[in-house]
Length: 89
Ligand SMILES: [Zn+2]
Image (cartoon, rainbow, N blue to C red; front, side, top):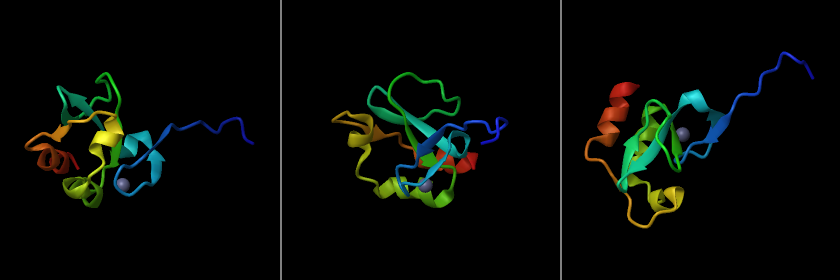
């Protein structure tokens, strides 16, 4: 193994379940049980990840596992969350 190989942190996309380098994914976090996009990767608490990919972001609309992903019972998505994320693509 080459010593120059850097370890890249990988996360799994909620929607397509692919593992990708963290920087290729949006981080989602919850603020008062509302799911927000954590653009700066700095919000506290449990995060969930979704590809910076229109198909995956749009897939969140019908994604049912948010409560499980955040280990909370009553999470909801922000009104313009998906539109805002698509705007960041
Ligand atoms: Zn994905």
